[in-house]
Every structure is written in C-alpha cells, then in structure tokens.
Length: 379
Image (cartoon, rainbow, N blue to C red; front, side, top):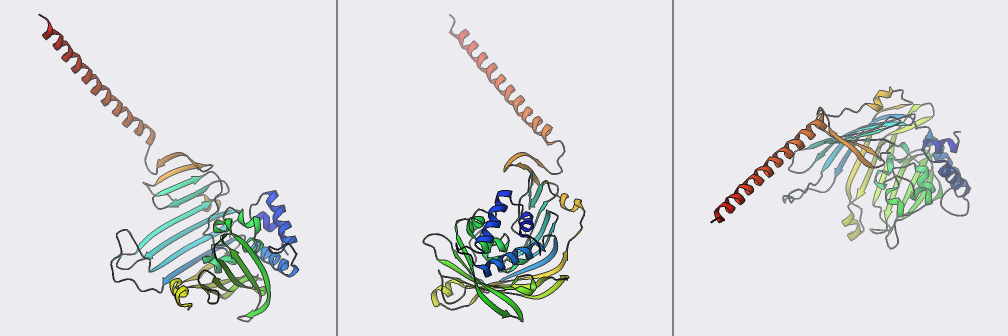
C-alpha cells in the first residue's frame, strides 16, 4: 500500500500542508470532529489509489450535446448558442511534469463550426501556455484544470479540479487549495452511507453535501466508488435544493473498465446528463437538458517521454508572446519578428525627429512673423 505521505508529496504541497492534511485525514476521515473509522478508511484508500495514476498518458474525446432545440429566431449579434461540441485532448503527467493539448470544435445553429487549440506544458521549471493568438511563458508551475484525473472524470460538472480525496476531506484543506474555485467559500462534507453493488461491482456509497454560502441552497451528491476498481467512481446522482430536493439535477455513470496494468483500472466511457433546470424548477420533473460523454482513445501508465516533449511548445509566427514572473508580465514580443526592439526604437526616433522639425519650423515661422511685425511698427 502506498503511504499517504507519498501521495501528498505528489500533490506538491508544502511541508506544513502535508502535516495538516495528514492530521485531517487521520482525525476526521471526512469533515466531522468525531472520527469515522469507515469513512477514514475509504478516504485513505482513495488517496492511495490516486497515487497509482501519478504518471499517465491519456488521449480522449469529449462530446457535448444540448437537448434543447435551437430557436427559430436569429440570435443577437455576438451571441452564440452552442448546440454541440467536440474536445479532443491528450493529457500527460510524468515525474512532476505535465502537458495538455486540446482541440475544441464548437457547433452553433446557422453558423459555421469554429475550432480552437490550447496547449499548456510544464517542464519542471517553466509553464508554457498557448491559447489562440497569445502565448505566456511562466517562470514557475501553473496547475491546469483540464488534466485528466481518473477519480474525478465523473465529476466534471462539479468543478472538482483537485484530488477526490481532498474533496472527501473538505475543510480548510479544500477551501485553501489553489484550484478550489467555487469551493473556496463553500462548506464541504462527506459521509459513508454503506456498501452497495453497482454493475456487479462492490461499491462504497458516499454522501457529499456542499453548502455554497450563507443563504444559498445546498447541493447533495451521492457517489459510488468501486472498491475493486481502485476506488474509481462508478455512479453519481446529484440534487440541487435550489431546484428540487426529490428529483436529481445530474446523473453520471462510468463503464467499460479496462485493466491498463496489473491491478490498475480505468473507465473508458464516462457519461453525464444534466436536467433542464427551468423545467425541473417549474414542474419538479426530470427532462435531460444536455449531456456529455467522455471516451478514452488511448491510455498508458508510466509514460517515458523525452524532456523535450514538455519543453517544446510550437508557437506560430505572429503570436504575441509574454514572459511572466510572479504573475507579472516582464517582457513581450511577437513570434517570428526579428530584432523587435531596434525596430521599435527606430519608429520612436522617427517620430521624435519629425516632431523636432515641426517645432523648429513653427519657431522659425513665429520668429519671422514677429520680426515682420516689429519692422512694420517702425516709423
């Protein structure tokens, strides 16, 4: 069994955070002050299982569809309603480095499809981000939200961009995490309901409750973790009390589990459906509003890619490139433009020269006019 400390080390937490997180799991196993040995065991098993996927190379395709029919009316100028989308991605994590490449195609009614590309890579020192016509080179590590995490693939709509074990722990460790997002101001708790069998798999049934803020409704999510599939989520059902306490707003299911290495599994198909919220709130009736399906195309454990794969991000000519240090832009350039500083200096010098001659001409004109006026005033 992999130690919990080694798992925390893989999260690049500070020593203080490691100690606090370890104590939190050991004492609470969730979010309550009284220890829950069974929930504590589940959380530790999830944490240990997540570490098994620390080095992973995955290619996948994400298809999104809305069930709502497009309006017959033309949308206002600048407004685009996405009817469907396809995201093809490759996510690689290897010995603390990572690279994420995505190609996204959006389809809107009565419009041509649009395609965009995005790359983010960390080579152990710098993070390079290419997003359309702009590229940033950061002097440190930036953690992306889009990396493939096997234990949170089923929670794509829940904005869980951090380890599932951290989500189960909750508390300050979750709210202060750099990728906490909306959970920074939420109160998250998890408890063990019991054991159930889903699709022939023995599962731990977890109840997760999220209070977003004072005065806002709670989200309740049921999550089933397959004990013999590295505690990967198999099923989820979520309720938004803002809409309905009895009819779910979201359902999800993982299937096609494959063993990519001895004892290490991955679901090659993950599907999530979300209700039509206005109909759910108005009629307390579930009608699918949109859905997304994730299909794994390729998965390899412990990749051995060259360092260059994480260092080299092809930046097209004409791209605006900015060097960023501590969140501040230090220098900038246009890719493919040679010697931009002398050119910029020449342009500035030309402007100054023209301005100088204009001022000189104006001064000469005023001097001549003043001299002519004095002569005219003489008797």
